[in-house]
Image 1 (cartoon, rainbow, N blue to C red):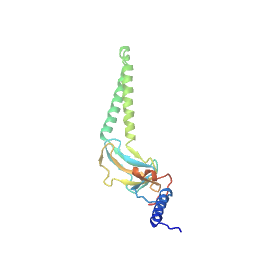
Image 2 (tube, rainbow, N blue to C red):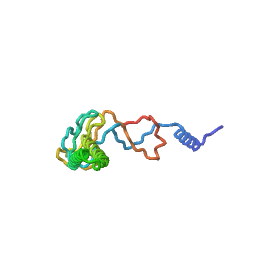
Image 3 (tube, rainbow, N blue to C red):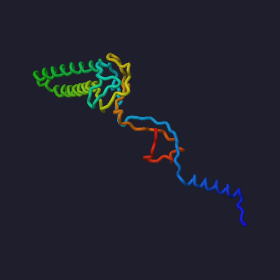
Length: 193
């Protein structure tokens, strides 16, 4: 005659359950903080201290790549351009005068030409800065972040961020997974929001 010890049965059930729990992957849930962010975005920032002279957009506006967003005006830059133009005219006049005088004066022409080349390089650099004062959209999408206080005539500082543009119909989710849970997360694992 054979009898079963009740403790042995309970212990066997517990051990079997623990082994099954450890060996069989069961669905589990963990909650992590996540945010949606655009896949591609443009941060609209100011390349130099200036004043906003024209404003073509506002929050919520739809823009396309290459569309002008705003124009800046820098009095310091405009004064530099005017000064370089005056310097160029003076040097051209001096070179013309030297060319129509004695051989001794004509010997100064190469020096004046080098000075003119230097002024021309400065002038072209200033013109390029002026071209950069017209800020364009580098990506198509919506102006989803914008400083609503931005207005024509406002002075803005170099590297100041005025807004962001992105195609908000195409987003990605970024979340922070604490290190202790990282082994439980796999690529392409189903997630719910």
